[in-house]
Length: 234
Image (cartoon, rainbow, N blue to C red; front, side):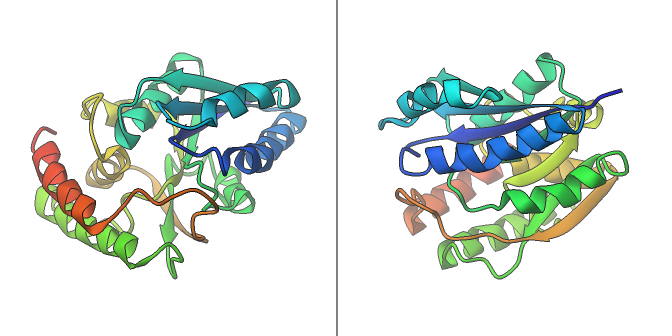
């Protein structure tokens, strides 16, 4: 019996990256399909102000596994949750999420795919990150916030590189509001809290491959305040 996987990505102002990212990750879908399983690459344009969605539409005829979706801006977390629920509603057995900025490597996906029936949540951990001190600070801050709110220690709760089995993901999503700001942090924390079958893998995390980083210290502070408020709703 074949496994159905949806590879999902949010995209916001990624016109500089999106063609390269689609090319790299569509090759993953093609290999999965060639092995007798079924894969779709679903990218949700989160109200970009540039040509991200237009580029995706133009590329779709060349990439048959690609499904571009256009939606109003709702932020990274809400878009990730939208994609998870979209994949579930359309019959996925597994969902893999990464971002569309080119920071992760498709070659590192296969270690997770190989063990998809052994673990329900497989999550990357970003050692030796190349994306700046502010992002590292966010990760360390979130680790502390998760400990305070959930009383669990999560290695790298917000990593945008994760393979999840749909039956267990559905259970975790029951606890998370549709507009939750730090969706992947909540998924990781709840999965650890519930003692789900989890595996952690060191992954490469490169600098953003194009475009502009939207994170600055002022926004990091707002993220922290927002996170404390959001976690109280779970």
